[in-house]
Amino acid sequence: MFDPKVHVRYFLRCLGILPSIYEGEDSNKLALIYFCVCGLDLLDALDQLPGKAATIEWVYKHWVAIDDYGGFRGSDIYRDTGPYDVPNLAATGFALQILVTLGDDLSQVDRNKVRRFVERCQRPNGSFSPVVGFGEEDLRYCMLAMTISRLLDGSAVDSGRLLQYVRSTLAFDGGLSMSTGGESHAGLTYCGLAALKLAGELDLCEWQPTLDFLVHRQIHYSEFNKRELENEYADEDDNGAFNGRVNKYGDTCYAFWCLAALELLDIADLVDGEAVKRFLLEQTLSPTMGGFCKTNAPDELPDPLHSFLGIAALGIIRTPGIAPVDVTVVLRKDRMV
Amino acid sequence: MYDYSDIVIEEPVEPSPLCQILYSDEFKQLIGIAKALMRSNEHSERALKITERVIEKVAAHYTIWSYRLSIVKGLQNYSLDKELDWCGQIAVHNPKNYQIWHYRSLIIELILERIGSFDLKQEYPILEKMLDQDSKNYHVWSYRRWLVERFNLFRDTNEFKYTEKMLEEDVRNNSAWNHRFFVLLGDKKTLTNDQIQAEIDYVTAKVDIAPTNPSSWNYLKGIYNKLNMDVTNLQPLATKYSDLNSVHSQYAFELLAEILEKQKLFEQAIDIYALLEEKDSIRKRYWRWRSSRLSF
Image 1 (cartoon, chains in turn purple, brown):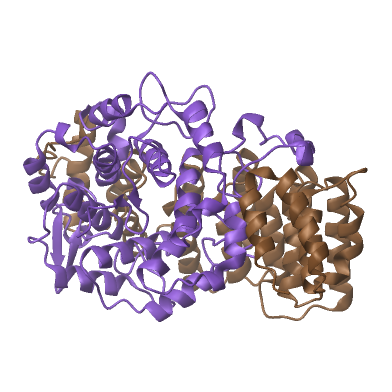
Image 2 (image 1 turned 90 degrees about the vertical axis):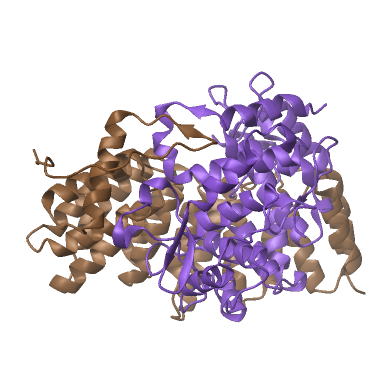
């Protein structure tokens, strides 16, 4: 049985005051808030969140415009740093997701400036960088750029070049990767497919090997392959879980990345929902603290990312008590108008 | 040490209504100095030191890295080799950090720009150290992939030997398999038949060591697909490991089904899918779906 109450308490606790050991998370603060706020939304508990208006106002304080483009900065520590106070795609995506979840109509966002920001982050090869002109390019930023575009009802992103780029990251075993020739990775595979879905460029026929890669991420030790348990990464308790790469252990977040990617292709029912539910509820859920841990290792504590993605994964396989999630923009399904 | 007494530290970090972090005085002081230096874009040794301290605290700070690069470029006498050593120390303490390896590649580009050449030998110790810590570290392998591309190390003996060593230690190290694939086939060059055969022999021997290991089967199929070779040639190997009364492998059955599909032997393929449905029950709906899509 899934009991939402303990997880509501977990998210509310994470949204409270954090001790100074969280200083290192400063740049990820908007992400942390998004995980917790959207987690509460999926648990139908947003009414228990205090200070929504103050939060909306605070998120808008992250706005930064440069010339003709603008977006959100990652944290207050970037403010007033002259040439280094620039918007970031991840922060902009998380800020918009928080605002939409809290019921803001985005009327204070200068949509054209954000659209120009997203367009300027696109590189000639079709990929996106985290800030204009600097930083590593990969599929995470493609997904974020397209999420932002969708939340703002469109932008002039070149979807043809985006498709070319996503194709270029296809690994020999069907998964998508960091760059041409990189190792297939379920999280990046989700990001690439989500970006294409949002760009209207996702066609199941083209992605059969990717589908094969995704369904094989569900871990199954049986009579058929019991020799694999000799592998130091293998753990019989991972049965039903998803891993992110071939021959890796099961991890809560890949339940979401894989189920969501399959849902984008409208075929999430090709894997075993009951088995992954058992793994999440029995192996990584923290019954005392609430939330979910990354893996079933005994020394782990739950964290907001794995808690949110664990719950969102359970939402995809229709667990009672969890609202379904829109797997393109990763918000509660009825949040987007 | 450096003197920062001339810097006026302005407003403290604003409190936030949610996830309010109780920053230590040390953190506030450090960020205050960093912000003032960034605002004036100061290129100095003391600024370099501050970027290091910020990175140690908040490695995901996305513009401190571009500020550091700008300082390094601005300080003409600052040794870029020293900067690479620094990168190595930061990487060892932040094994999951994305930015550090990208930054390292930018420093190498800068060395190439200034000196015209770069001695790759200095890269191997840090890569080995990182992969000894975590033999599947995604960022480190991605960086090694970049080196192969940037310095044209396709079919380089050293790279091959390294993947062989890693696969010797753990034949299931998918990152090592992937790297080998890129080293072998990542450019547009055509391989000789001998080269191809040698590689197929290599991976087949690895299949024999661990027939239930998916990495080696994927690698083998990957080579066939990439080189447009006829996968039905793998039938003897697939058959060898699809005998339920002897050592067998799910991946051999999967490959056999694929071969039978290619040969339009659909009824036999359906039998294999039925077996997969029974034995690999977690994916039973997938195997049923695959079976239902066979067109007679």
